[in-house]
Amino acid sequence: MTDFDWQDYAAETQAIRAGYQRSHEDENSIPIFATSSYVFESAEQAALRFTGKQPGNVYSRFTNPTVSAFQTRLALLEQGESCLAFSSGMAAIMAVGMALLKSGDHVVCSRSVFGNTVLTFQNYFGKFGVSTDFVSLTDPAAWEAAIKPNTRFLFLETPSNPMIEIADIQALADIAHRHDCLLIVDNCFCTPILQKPLLLGADLVVHSATKFIDGHGRCVGGAVVGSEELIDKQIYPYLRTGGACMSPFNAWAFLSGLETLALRMQAHCDSAFELAKWLEKQPAVAKVHYPGLASHAQHELAKRQQSHFGAVVSFELKGGKDQAWRLIDATRMLSITANLGDVKTSITHPATTTHGRLSAEARAEAGINDNLVRISVGLENIEDIKTDLLRGL
Ligand SMILES: *Cc1c(COP(=O)(O)O)cnc(C)c1O
Image (cartoon, rainbow, N blue to C red; front, top):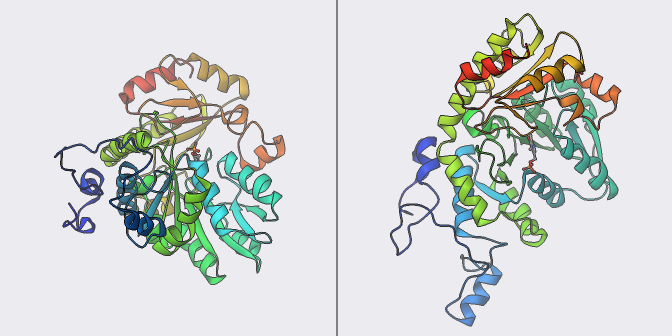
């Protein structure tokens, strides 16, 4: 439906209808284009397609109609000009670095990012002469102080995992731009339904589509959204060559995820908020980390920056590791898994799983104590989730 200007439609409509033109078969659902290559009408057309002088598909490492539909929808939802899909969230982050960094460059990164993101910058880009400094997510002055003349970009996730701290995206975008740097935001926890970092001044948004975008724990995938200049001119040539493209099968699953994303996020967040308030009242609980609570240090910022408070709640029990493990092991229904963003509620002990490879000092500095439990609240009935937790509380 190329005659539609999808920009004029609301997010829920874009997520269901944009990005795909029905074929001659008149299908009502986007097909999985299981094809590695495409056929040209003539040698001349092949030549034009290969040079990019004529738009159109060439090879599915470059473009694929099912993947393109996903990219178009996610770009619209994030209100970015362009989007590229990748085989995983980490592949998307790797592509941003490979495309934008060169030896001698510097990166400022939040200390509270996904563990593999730390390793990507520290171990892999570090190996090729890119240095990275890690700073506190919530301290804009520390970000500004860490910027050097060779800093290329600032990288963060908000809310952070597992402490659910909030960064001021607009303030950090202003700092980045004052120093001629880019701001890159991993928007995995909020999705564009809760927060649109590009509208707050970020230059690129990265996603692990594996989490809320899929929403059903089925597929691994990732994406990057931003301006045509950054996405099409700078990152796309790397995707074409580097090869970490999204499979059309996974794109099809993510498309169905996007169709219900707005509804699911609302329900996830409503339940997480209720659970956070309920946990705060439990005698066995020492502290709850959730931006919807007035006790949260960035509660006002979260209200301003996000349309809801998110689906992930973490809390500290009175006691230590034994109490945390006992609570986790007493559940019967919740999934004991470090994954998040699923319709199934998951429960995890960050200190011995996702953040177990950090040194004890690094964990203490990040506030990840042995008594901390993290829950990604799913879409089961909230009373059943409470009942399951009550067994161990
Ligand atoms: C899971 C996750 C990633 C990595 O995504 P994959 O799809 O697992 O490669 C990156 N950032 C955040 C915030 C994540 O939760």
